[in-house]
Image (cartoon, rainbow, N blue to C red; front, side, top):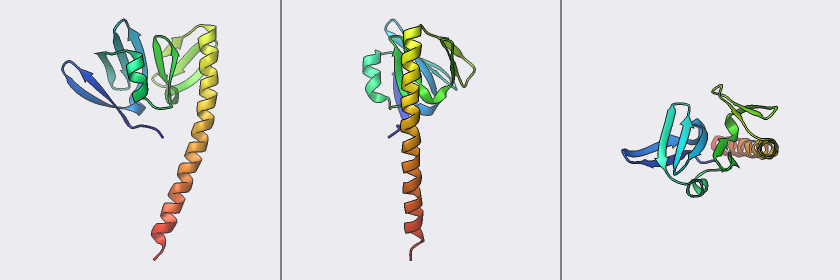
Length: 130
């Protein structure tokens, strides 16, 4: 199941960030910078504390990065392109691990979407019955 939001507790308040808007997270010492389509959030946390709040679309591909696999548009020659036109560079081992994770996630998501479509069809059929 895919979660809808991530709650960030920042000194100035609490922010509810839609998971789909998160591009990636980057660890900077004791801070996490959350890059989203709407801007960046910076807060005190560790990746070990954040990972349980994330769903399957997020990959901790590197000790300093968590990527949203849904936002990747290309993997090529150790470069990862995201749909906001940002490009990240990783070493060969990280790149190959991420490539494998993306392939596995894509297969899981294809199956999950097919199951969700079947559930919708059943709900529509049940709603039409008198």
